[in-house]
Length: 74
Image (cartoon, rainbow, N blue to C red):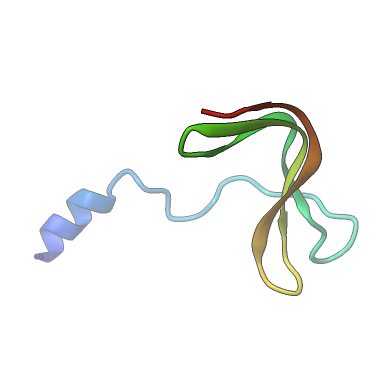
């Protein structure tokens, strides 16, 4: 890949994240979503009411928790 091809591919990608997150303490979890979401696996799905968040420790990861509302088996 040439430098020109690379620059064309990345031209619309921001160089920095323009959004900031306010935290009460360093490394607080960051809420991604609160409410309903669906967990799917092939033809099965479960509707959950809960939270999805980004956690820093002990390892950086996305976590979810909640209570099932409805399950559909295929």
